Every structure is written in C-alpha cells, then in structure tokens.
Length: 171
View 1 (tube, rainbow, N blue to C red):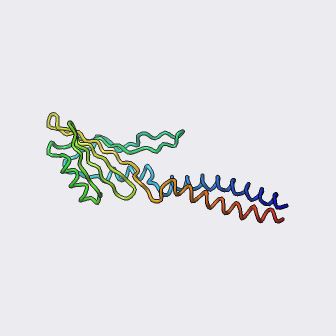
View 2: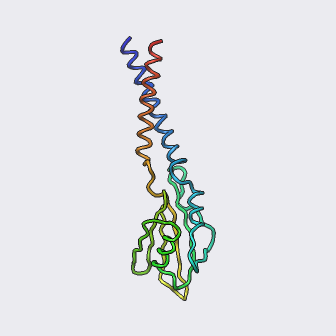
View 3: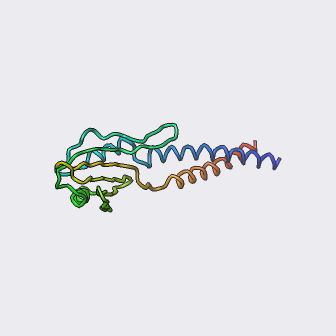
C-alpha cells in the first residue's frame, strides 16, 4: 500500500509540475513581458524634433512556430542636425533610462531602456541633407525572469501534485 501511495504521489507531482510549468510560461509570455501592442505604443511615443516617420511601427521577427517574439521597427528621416547626442538628450527628457551613445564609422547607436522595454535608435551619417534613422523597440529584462517563473510554477505543481496524490492514495 505504501508503494502505491508513493507512486500516485509521484505521478500527480510530475503531471502537475508539467502543467504548472506550461502555465507559468504562458503567464510570463502574456502578463510579465510587454505585448507587441505595448511595444508599438512605446515606438509611437518617441518624439524627436525634426524626425519624420516613414510609416507606422511594424512588428518584425515574429515567428509563431518557434514562439519567437518580435520587435517593433520604425524607419524615419531627420534633419542633418540630429545626431546621437540629440537623440540621447531627447530620450532622457522622455523618461528613458541608461541612455548611451555608441559611435561607429557610418552611424551612431543610442540605446536606452524604460521598464521592461529596450530601445535602440541608429542614426546614420547625413547623406544629401537627410539623416536616416531606424528605431527598434524590444523586450528587455523582465522581473521575474522566464526561468524563475517556470521553476516556481513547476515547484508549485510538484507540491500540489504530491498533496493531491497523497489524498487520492488514502481513498
């Protein structure tokens, strides 16, 4: 009888751990991390003097079969006075944190973050009196992380499964 109780407890623990881990993954995906719509909203809130968007923000890189989440990309043009320092100052004024400028041979990349959202704006060197700008809004680090969320879910599933298994084995 003791072997049966242990086997039932282990079975319920394993099953509920798997179900709870999947549930925790879904919770992290839909509740903890920003949605595509939230990323689009952040992209629309970026304001720089002299910046003209070439179109609406679009979700790029999303592929459902692999559960890859996309990022939001906005292409724009700006006055030749716009450079990395101007972009960094504007982002800091809008509440973006940790804004940094990295200068390359042909462009400058300004990175910043706000909440669980990361932003990278690439400012290309002026050509013909116009500066090309590409902004990419992505999901940043979230708290709790995916691994912690899934492990907590699985742990709760193990405890609940053991409790249910023990109660079922007594009957």
